[in-house]
Image 1 (cartoon, rainbow, N blue to C red):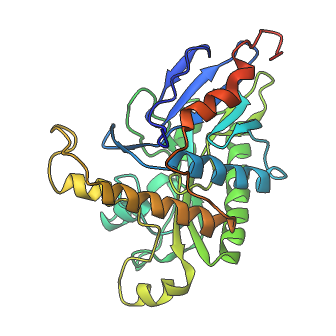
Image 2: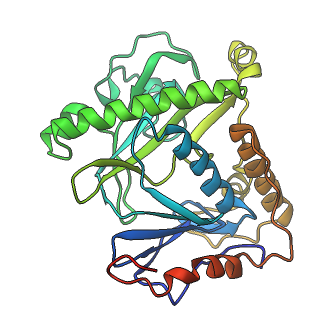
Length: 321
């Protein structure tokens, strides 16, 4: 089947199924991460979007490879377009969000808090008079608690992080330096492609030696906000939302028809799913400048993934495959 809705592979050990990714922990300290095509919103799976998992994996690969000189990352290999083999890490309990603009719609976004009258969110000091979606004087870090097991992220300040012992002073200094350097690289490279990297989130972990390592994904359409540079100034002047990769067709359609947190989800039209898939594909091409060929209908993605991961079916504790 050309859709990867589920990546359960019985021959692989220690399966953990997240909302989007299926993970397998090998006994030698490696983790197999398979990005499915599941679309998650409202704390549930809504549908399956063709090519979504491959777009996310390959976009992250582009950025991991273009930032490896800044910060070590968890990647060991890519045996399949939807799969990364990485180091298993202890994930730090703080999610590092970097913002270059006064933007966002969630309860923890700078714009939401600013419009409520807050001028010192996250321990920052913001001036009066900023407009919606305006560039900030310089990028800022707005950390949140890392929500595990379905919890909700909560805003944090550097002082709160240290006072609670979530990170040591040395860890906070290191992840902050990494995050700002990664964001600067991302903004520079995005600008070369006619894009503005508006904000993004980074997840860091530590390995057995205590080394801080970038995990999860980086600068993907799911973890980052991008705007089109050529129309930004005009739209800002008119008070309009900047042009972006709008991939929330399904989310908007569902929320208009039911309470997605309580009600049964109605059947989602296939044209909405395909439109979302097209946005993901175009985002990959725009962000990376690389060619992306959609998966063909006759492709059995799970069979391909299984074949490419077959050498890991007999993984042993000493790291052999």
